[in-house]
Length: 358
View 1 (tube, helix red, strand yellow):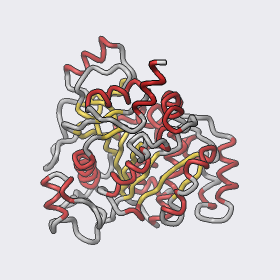
View 2 (tube, one colour):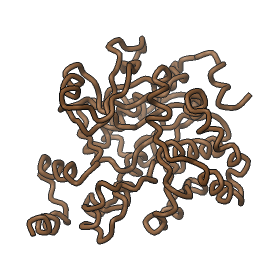
View 3 (cartoon, rainbow, N blue to C red):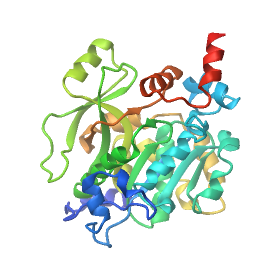
């Protein structure tokens, strides 16, 4: 029986003490009160499987390239641009993920055409934690490839949180507290993938939306809601309706067990999973790069949302991230809106404003 089918046949045994693992050097003060208590001695049993963090850094960030060219002098993808006063979005995401799990449990997926920008990353990560795609084929292949790598590294099933590396988050502690709630739900209900929905503050037409069921699952901790459907970049009229009825912005942060992610993919997009069959025997070996080249040569580009999440809503839950200042920074206007709203004055702002004025 394939390893990613095994979980579907197990009896669901809710964890008596769902909890989290925080990096040894984490600043616990940035976490919510509930999770400070967990960190200070009320954690889950030591036998619980520690979570992994998967950081998505393979995208091209085309819409933000006019701004990254002004900041960095070349049109690099936004995750590799030092937008945050000398700190790249990827580096900031790595620091945020350290509040969730220790650094040797981090895996970063990149695309080989961006090698000049991630060259130093391999030396900073633990061995085999850098997944190099032969090309950017979208988030669906990048996530599946990385989940297979994590399954190989963990030697078993394990919980994982998937983080885009090119988003803006003002308060890392509040954000990770919400991710930890999602982890607790995934431990209690391992048959589900749990998405982090950001509590909307406006009827955005450029974001994806999660439309949750009004009735949460009967869990003891934070409520988790079934998902009725997704809406991608709705009209203003529809966005207003979604906003008024409490729909959530889709952060694309997901938490679940590796086997649950792969099992969901097998159910709704079996061709995507079987495309990686030639790669599995080569994982961690000297022929992995060669096998990956063959797999990616035959792959069509596809997003994880449209291939897996949209047709697989019955296998998903969502939790609310409340009072979180978040943006996908999908275009220069969104970055500048954050600058204006927060009063933040990054080092590059003057020359960008001068260039715009000229």
